[in-house]
Length: 219
Image (cartoon, rainbow, N blue to C red; front, side):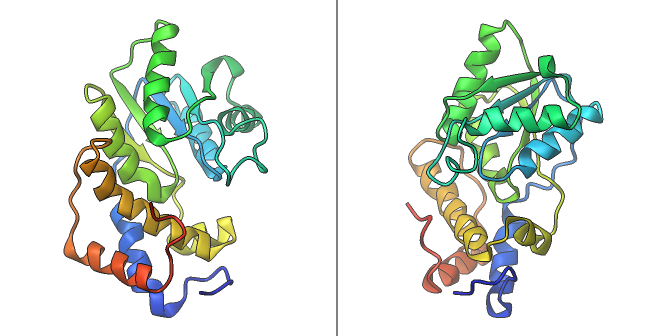
């Protein structure tokens, strides 16, 4: 495996197949709330703030505690740091709710829903803002746990190469792509998410990347 920030040519077709699969290709439309899903990627907070400032939703919920991969970068918790970043970009503090306990995608939605209920806020639609390769899993999980709301998925609009450069670690991105691809099928089997299409070209690309050694995010 390479340590550069470029996707190796021998892997590019398979990596792009997974990258395109996880993009839901939704057109972002106005909603009651924008939900920014915590992770190591501050671009989620950036794009959530940008969409708020464009008037796409009147309220933001940032959700996320910490994972082993984020605790050093966001020691106060992912959602707390996301809010601070959004406020720095011009979002009013009162427009942001913070859910700081969730440690997985299912909890992101369960706890966000409870937080909104606690504040007596009713929503019928949401924009889910996540890492690019988390869109499909976020969609499938939310539709399982919160099926009555209308969902649009969104991510900071970057190409694969630009995203890898922004993260600075191609191995990490490929491992995460492979891990999220596995979770699409495995989490549906476990009842954590609704089933999603799983085309043959996605399965083959996934298997080749596993064979190439990108296994650190497999469950």
